[in-house]
Length: 59
Image (cartoon, rainbow, N blue to C red):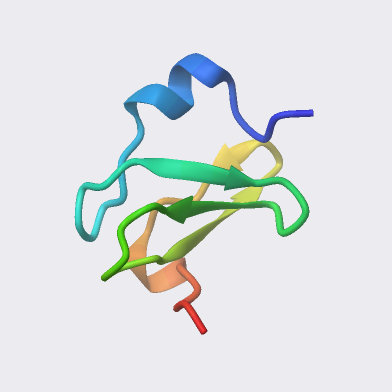
């Protein structure tokens, strides 16, 4: 089951670098697709929290 509606995912972008986002259903996150950024934003109650302060840094 998708975390967010497909139409919404198409228009969302990483707030830090403006790259597209992809879903990580297992982690319940939207992940930046940029090789240099890669921030992971949580999805809580089907609402993406697109705040850089709330994002998880890549490992």
